[in-house]
Length: 168
Image (cartoon, rainbow, N blue to C red; front, side):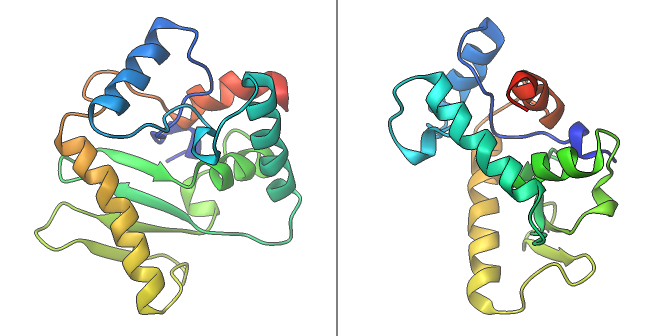
């Protein structure tokens, strides 16, 4: 599976009807940060916000560090990527055809009664605090999906990548 095929929580702009609908759906389930980078606070404009976020991604692209991507599989089977910055950095580093199994990742799977963490190539740090944070963070995505988030409108990593193409 290509990284670009996975669904992300974010869109870059609020200027199209599709994006406005996606942002509204996020707010309807209690997620106010669908617009990429807004979790960091107030920005003067899209230019300032996206410039900052893309510079972070570029920095990760050239870093010697490789952080794992969290893949969340909801109880419905819907798959989200939850570490958008690193996922985009890997796309820039390795190209648009990079596959999930070519980068560090782990899975938090909600298809059973108890969430399962599937560690791929020792990508999960082996301490209770990190594991608890990973499950809690993934659980927030699962809760939103259960409330109907992204039932019809989706935003793949490819969609966000294409929105940001002029910034790379």
